[in-house]
Amino acid sequence: MTELNDTPFRCGYAAIIGEPNAGKSTFINAVLGTRLSIVTSKPQTTRRRILGFHNGDNHQVLFVDTPGLVNPAYALQRSMLESAKRAMEEADVLLVIIDAPRAIERNEVLPEMLAPLLAASTLPAVAAINKVDRITDKMELLPLMEKLLAAHPFKAVVPISALENDGVDAVIAELVPLLPAHPALYPDDVLSDQPERFFVSEIIREKIFETFRQEVPYATEVFIAEYTEKNGVDVIAADILVERESQKRILIGKGGSAIKDIGTRARVDIEQFLDRKVYLELHVKVREGWRNNSEWVRRLGYDL
Image (tube, rainbow, N blue to C red; front, side, top):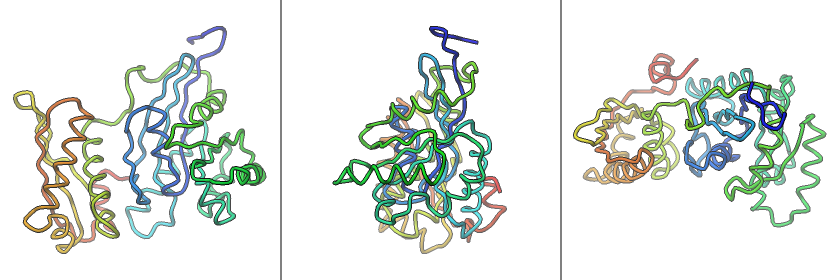
């Protein structure tokens, strides 16, 4: 076991859980100093578990970014909820992200979906009260912290602003002692266990969420059909699946203007992420009712 100043090296999984739009993905991006999880203003942007590795002198924290907890209305959401539950079961410690303005407005520190899951868990947990930069009266934070400690035996409650990277280091400091003494599981120059094609599909999906409102983003899935290298350029062909012809028309736009704009913006971010030139093709295809079709949900890589 690697040791530094007689302190055992610690390594383990920290599952990040919370409501949609609480700031889970923003937190993991702040920790890693790069955009690993896509972030938009819309809830339920994250659909899959994403592992991000934070390395310190005496620790490696394997953060698991999970989908937001919602009552599932269709097969895809059932998969998302099960993904979050499995992450909790397999973790060594839980990091609960609380949306501070939302909690104060509702006078409810533990959301309906989260409370029973926490109560059933025997894992140590740390709470991060996020978005404190949006709280005008900071005196409101103390009673919120007290209510959280009364609602669950958290090992620590830390006010943070993930967006401004404020308090993130304090959260890590609270998590590390709760991890098992164990050597690092991944090299320190690796940020995630996901392949490049996964992040390419997520960047494309992010642009769709940024562009469209209401139903269209939630009815889409991005599938990488081709990923090759030719003459020093990554050639990527992606299929964007929708549920109806009307959604396809909206996504393509008049004269192909919308899909062209999505492709242009996605290519810029993909090139920045991969640090190399990219040729990107996008194709929109209809798969009727795919979100509530268990076979299609599994085919697209989701577990049920």
